Image 1 (cartoon, helix red, strand yellow):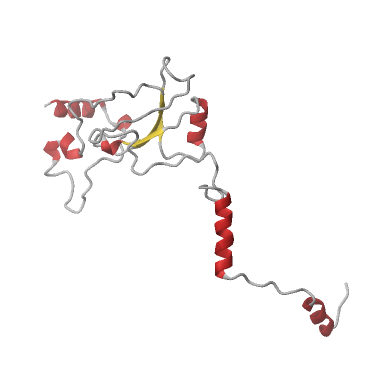
Image 2: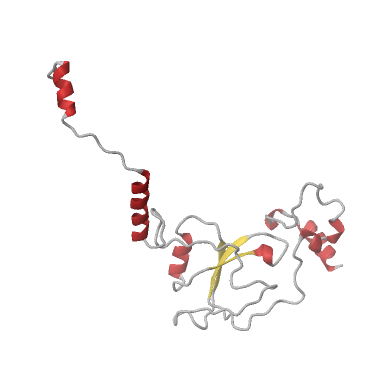
Length: 187
């Protein structure tokens, strides 16, 4: 190990040129060029990542029926029909894997709050025919109070403005409670 006098150390370190700092406009221009090179893709994002739509209405809602077109691969068109459902908010790459195994069909993402009193975000991959889709009549209840009108007076405090359920755990309910709910809905 060599020990240099202080004067020499200063001289050795001064031989390296100082890095010039980039100006803000130069760095933003470089960033823009980097992003433009990737198209619409965000840097660090997988090419096969599937983005969830907002709002999650799939191919339409009962209140807003629209003409839709579904492009099915020849191998998936017609019987045997399949219908695969899963939660919409999964780990990165899960929906890409599901689609890859089901003829590379893009999933339809739907929030059930547009169809019933429960708010559950789901994704579906299927080859069922969608031509001439129509609403079920009568329409199912859209809010908690539509489904359970007798509970309006004691259901919630005044500060709670929720009108839809966000979690349904039917596996934890006893059979007697399920029967009571069924009777209440029939009456």
